[in-house]
Amino acid sequence: DAKTTQPPSMDCAEGRAANLPCNHSTISGNEYVYWYRQIHSQGPQYIIHGLKNNETNEMASLIITEDRKSSTLILPHATLRDTAVYYCIVRVATQTGANNLFFGTGTRLTVIP
Amino acid sequence: DAGVTQSPTHLIKTRGQHVTLRCSPISGHKSVSWYQQVLGQGPQFIFQYYEKEERGRGNFPDRFSARQFPNYSSELNVNALLLGDSALYLCASSFRVGQGHQPQHFGDGTRLSIL
Image (tube, rainbow over all chains, first blue to last red; front, side, top):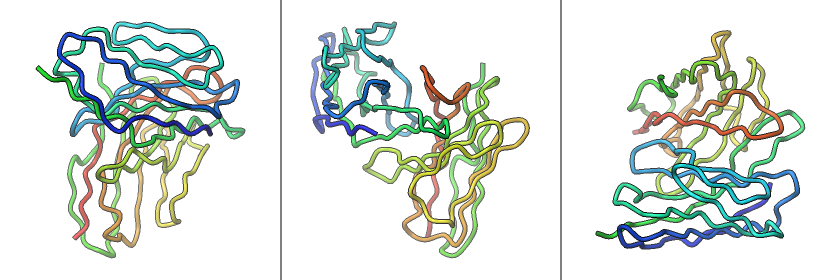
């Protein structure tokens, strides 16, 4: 599975866009990029995923570079409730059909009032 | 709709004891995965089960075992507990496994403390 590299921490002003980068330079063609976040004392929460194209849902947008070696998660209008650890994960289905998620240490995003 | 539910929420054990953690997946989900999250680190994959069969195993000792029942709920068992087993144990469910988009939905975990 491809490894991901994320900055350990970032700050963002409330109401501004939060842009969280992720490098996954060894990603393979069939590997999806997933983003999860974990708010203190809770389980990880699915945010968004993508394979090749940019994606948008009610929570965030995901921008994947054309060579797929990096991506950016965008929270368009950050609120205090978005303070969390954000994980960028590259997931592949194994020959046994498993869909393991390999988490790194993530980016701790702090939204500042 | 109910999400992934785990029990108990907190548990205190002593070294050498055995523990069983339980997980009920989201209704309709047939795959359950277990993760261990040590303080300050991201979750680490332990097992994935689908249709009662083990489909994946992480780098954990044989003291860790799991099973999935016909109703798709699951148990994680850990024998001969060590201090290092103190962690948040997370369960995640997904509809199926294999290729394609398969988001895993997590419960809030069981906090296991070993004294």
